Length: 183
View 1 (cartoon, rainbow, N blue to C red):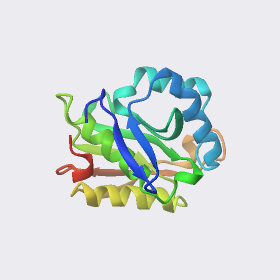
View 2: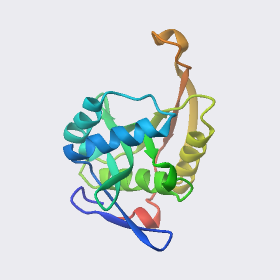
View 3: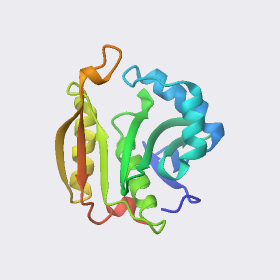
């Protein structure tokens, strides 16, 4: 999906959720969704505005009207440009269970694959107790006909606080885009 196009999603048959790359004005809404998730590591509001400005092609927001109701933050790894690292995914509580996180990921990868430098691998880190994220990325791997491999990466001693270890989940090589995410 091109970065200029939005994808409209039916949500309970009543409201429409649009998915598109973020704009700087969306940063505050992204920060609010992260804060309200009560599970993500909350970054400064500045970080979300910065991602919306500098990494918009590798990020997505979900909007209900002008309200940000979900987002995914990612970036291409500089030493491996065919790899997309997904840093955070979150949706508002009233949007959970509707497949929005998966649609955000699908739209992001499908869009990134059309810019002339395709994404072949997706990476993310997930703490062992985050079952919802583990299921989200396992489902993503199935939709994209890809293998998922999990390995140790960030250990407790890497963090200056009481952060849990975060194994890396490497998904790929990515197959054909699922029908709903096709460009």
